[in-house]
Image (cartoon, rainbow over the protein chains, first blue to last red):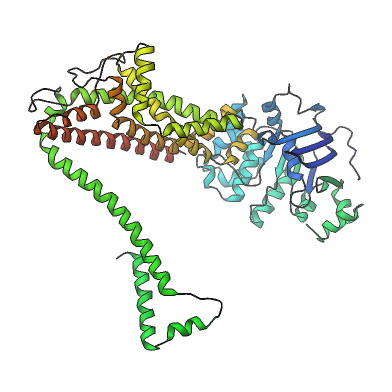
Length: 255
Length: 319
C-alpha cells in the first residue's frame, strides 16, 4: 500500500479499526490528509469509505453499535479523547450530506443558526452574504433570503448546505456523496464550487463516481472491503495505479 | 356518481357487450395466454365488495353519530339559553343551570393541559431523543402502552389515594387535574413519540454536524417539526379527559356546587359529572337538562379542537 507523506497533516488516522457491532468495517487504517487538499475516497458500496468520513467528525457517535480502536488525530490531538469538546470540534469540521438537508426555515436562518448557537459575535447579515457568495448561491437567492430553504431546487439546497457549513468557518469540509441526489447540471455547479473552496478549506469527498473523483480531487484513496488499497495523487492513481485491484476497479471490471 | 363506481360499471358493461357479441369471448380471452388465468368477474365482484364494505362502515359510524346528535339536540335544545349557562344547579329544573360545571371543566382543562403537556411531552422527548436504547427503556415503552389502556376509574382510585389523601390536596381542582393528567399522559407520550419518530434523522444530523448539542437540536429543529403531530395527540387526549366522569366521581368531586372555583385548591364539579347527576334523577325535566349539558360539552370540545386546528395551521405556515 502506498501512502501519502504530509509533514503536517490536518487529519491523521493511526491503526484505526471501526466496527458496527462485531463487524469490522474498516481495518487497520493508516492515512494522513494534507491541509488544503481535496481528497476523494472511492470504492464499491460497503467498503467503509463513508464510515471513515463520518468518524472524522464523530457523527458515528449516534450509531449505538459503533465502536473504534486506534486513533484519529485532528491538528495533532485525538478526537476520541473524552476531554475534547465535541461541539467545538464539529464546528471546525463541517459536513455536507448525501441528501440535501436544509432546515425547514428561511434561507438566511439556515445559514445563521449554526453560528448563533456557537456564539458567533460578528454581523449575521454579512455572514449570510459572504457564505452564500462562497457557495455560489448568492445571485440566485439574494432577493428571497426569507423564503424557506426547502423551496429551493435540489442543487440549490445542496449549495445552501455547503454555505451553511462554510458559515461556521471550518477548517475541513467533509462531503458524503454530495452529488448523488443531484442532476448533471447541479453536479457540475457543486464540482466548480469544490474547485473554488479548496483555496481555503481542506475537503474530503466520498464519491461513487470515479470521473468526479478524477475531476475534483488532488489525492484519491481507493478502499476495498474495509482496507485502504491505494492512496496517492489522483493523476497517478488513475493513470498508473500500483495495485491490480485499483486498476480493475478504475477500468470498471467490478464495483 | 362516484368515479370509482363509474369505471367499474363501464368496464363491466363493455364486457357484457363483448360477451353478447361473441358468445364465448371470455373463454377466448383466457386462451390468449395459457399462464394467465384472469377471472375478471370475480375480481370485479371483490372490488365492489371491498368498496361496499368500507362505505357501509363509514355510513354506520356517521349514522350513529347523527342519531346521537339529533336525539340530544331534540331533547336539549329548548333549555339552551343564557340562563342555563349563567345559573348554578338547582333542585328546580326550571332554574337549574350549568355554570359551576362549565367553570369547573375550564379550570380542570387548563390545569390538566399544563401538567400533561409538560410531563407527557417531556417524557416523550427523553424516551425518544435522549435515553439510551436498551432493555430497560424498551420495558418502559411497553409499560406506557399498557398504562394507556388502564380503565379510567383505576386512575380515580390512584388519585384518591395519592393526591386527595396522602398529599392532602383534598377534593380540589388540583387533585382532579393531576388525576386526569395521569390518565392522559400515556396517550400523550405515545402520540408525541410517534410525532418525534417521524422527524427525519437527516435533520438531526444536519444540526449535530454544525456543533449543536442535543438540547439545541431538539429545541430548534426536532420539536418544531413535531408540533403538529404532538398537538393532534394532545387534542385527542384532552377531549378524552374533558369527557371523563368516572375518575372524578371516584375522587369525590361534588355533584352539587353552587359556586365557581376561585383557585386550584377549591372543590369543583365538571360537565360530565353534572350530566351524570342529572341523568340519574327520576324527573324527566332533568333528563332534558342533561341533553342540554351534553350540547354545551360538545360545543366546548369543538371550540377547543378548532383552536388547536387553528394553531396547527398557523404553525405550518410559519415554517
